[in-house]
Length: 242
Ligand SMILES: Nc1ncnc2c1ncn2[C@@H]1O[C@H](COP(=O)(O)OP(=O)(O)OP(=O)(O)O)[C@@H](O)[C@H]1O
Ligand SMILES: [Mg+2]
Image 1 (cartoon, protein in one colour):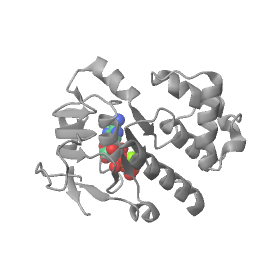
Image 2 (image 1 turned 135 degrees about the vertical axis):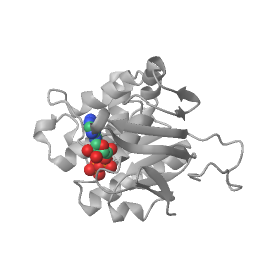
Image 3 (image 1 turned 180 degrees about the vertical axis):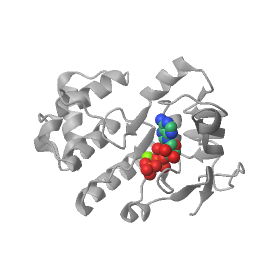
Image 4 (image 1 turned 120 degrees about the vertical axis):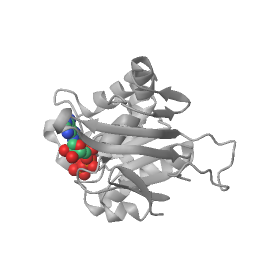
């Protein structure tokens, strides 16, 4: 259950701790007359096993919120708990710990041109503190890539891939560490219907099987249909739709 108003739903069993809790988070870019508040006192709870869609118009602050939860951007106010680790302002070490536990799919893929698909996926496990041998990483990478119809590109470099193929590599990378939280920023923006369904099904299955949560930014109606909950950022605040 997603709660945007701080009340606890009777449907949530008490033994299942939330994956992420966002409390009183505000964020502004710029200073002085250029200061622009993007998030205003946002509260959000992500429960295990849920696939949550985050919508909102361009510039609403969706990426900003995702990067705060993912500890890629420093907090200015409030706090965010992910898997029991509390992040407050200026908590750099906790940020590093946090990043290891999250599968982040960036809006622009963020792949390095000189690193092959396999190496990218293997590296994700090393950076995530889940070291695998080459053959273990290969097996895992192939398992995920196969689900995304990308197995034949295991040894390709990003420059040899289409935008949609790069996007699927970014999805695979986010899943390599068995994350308990997946943060996806438009993960199907450049995909056709069939590939989008592969991505959505894989993420949903991961969430259900691992008791993980997914918070996925998308305008893609095909994904919205599969959401357990839909929340919308409007004027810096959360509005729950479903
Ligand atoms: N580094 C930055 N410096 C100044 N302003 C920024 C910066 N990053 C984002 N903004 C502004 O903050 C607002 C929210 O940006 P954000 O990227 O979070 O929006 P978004 O909801 O992800 O939009 P989109 O759907 O286009 O990806 C926008 O008005 C944007 O111009
Ligand atoms: Mg964005």
